[in-house]
Amino acid sequence: MKTEQHWLVAQFRQGFNAENRSRATRDLRDGFGHIELWAVLGLHDIRQRYRRSKIGPFWITLSMGIFIGALGLVYGKLFGRALDAYLTYLAAGFLVWSFMSTTILDGARVFLRSGGMIKQLTAPLSVYVLRMVWENLIIFFHNIWIFVGLAIWFGIGFSWVTLLAVPGLLLLLVNGLWVGLLLGLLSARFRDIPLMLQSSMQLIFFLTPIIWEPGMLPGRPLLLSGNPFYHFLELVRAPLLGQLPSLENLLVALAVTLIGWAVSFVFFVVYRWRIPYWV
Amino acid sequence: MAFIELSAVTVLFPIYDAARGSLKSTLFGSRAGSGTGGTVVAERGGRAVTGIRALDQIDLRLEHGDRLALIGHNGAGKSTLLRVLAGIYEPGTGSVQIDGKPVPMFNITLGMDMDSTGYENIVLRGLYLGLTRREIDAKVEEIADFSGLGSFLGLPMRTYSTGMRMRLAFSVCTSIRPDILLVDEGLGTGDAAFIQKAQARITRFSEEASILVLAAHNPSLLRQLCNKALMLEHGRITKTGTVDEVLDHYHGR
Image (cartoon, rainbow over all chains, first blue to last red; front, side):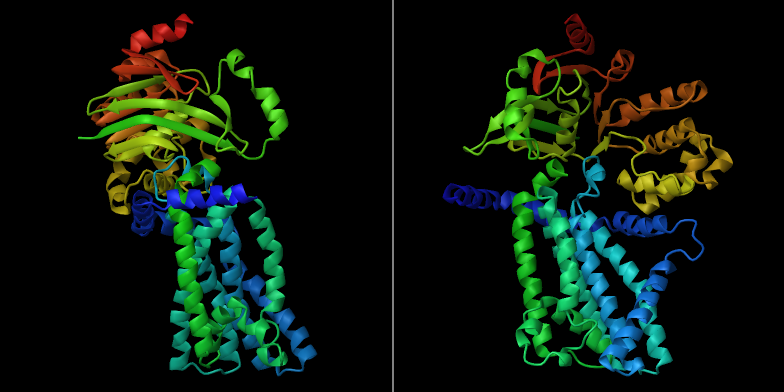
């Protein structure tokens, strides 16, 4: 076991050299430069999925609407909440959650599913991650109509606070990029990771206050504070519901962003060149 | 002026999922007998990672005007070498210097989509080739014209015959002006009438590239387009020279 560790540390020491760092940085920068490629491909993927269907991508909206409607009626009753407040809470929470969870699950497959392309194109690898985040953003903007519809129906006012959801969403996108880079890279090598994530995300869904509200769980602060998903969720959900996210939410989310990017960058520098061999 | 230099390039493909014991027993000793494939290895710092050495100590220098034919059996390392030249596979050891923009053309229909129209596919294929939207828009008419597909271009590609799909892909791919052109297994074309038209275009297309590297098994194509050749065996360069010399050597075995 000891020699194993040694070997891994050596790989990182050797791999994190100036040459690899500049190549990784160039890959990330050039990835943004290929905006036409990933923007078209992301849009194409979505159109592809709904080609020749009558309402097309609005199936995403519809299925989400049905889900929220059904869940809202049952759990609203169970928890004894007023229907209008509970449905908007659920819609806003589920909207953000589905962005986070699909970004993580798609992120794990980001290089695996593009194996054919990676081996035939000279495009930077970050292109595939950008395409994935972009795709999920498009889906987010289909899902948001459920919330907007409910908010208008129940007369929830829009104010300046609502606009704070925008920087919250931007922070989610920034995090989506490192998640895709890191999980995509690790999953390309260890194929159990995407499968493992699939079952963990289901569990995390129930542990995160999406169906239930933080106030329903008194005396368990760790379950909330220790859950990064909760903090990111609040950064977008709270403004949508007309409240300010807490300072704690913001600080934890920023810390996760920084640490996540730092770790991903190190991994990307050291192992980027191996991805085409792995996929 | 484009140029490429490889020195002592070795590419090792790791194998993670093969059962170790059985792999060793099957593959040791098989190397001498089989005419194909790279070299199978079991090593690396005491860890029993087995892999395939697809390229072994390759030294190669290509300059402006070089049209190189890669000759060798299946699995000799031709496609791997092309991917190294494209910068897709960065070798584990050895150094690669590429000056110029390589355009790999391993599968001319890459990125094309059956449910999209001909015009949409021109855009998709163009983006995959590294063109910008504006560059594609400027070429669309010429591409459409050369493909001879007329009003079919407004229909989804699944309504095309195989030959028509190849025509479209060929027309898009040969509309660009690459620095370094890397082609695997030639460029498929279409029916006899189109092949005639395509011949001239292939010649001009490959002549305009600063460097061409072509892996193919068709001797007449290699003779037509290339001015030098190298032969690969088990990931090593075993012969270099003119196309005829290397082809004779290859067929002489």
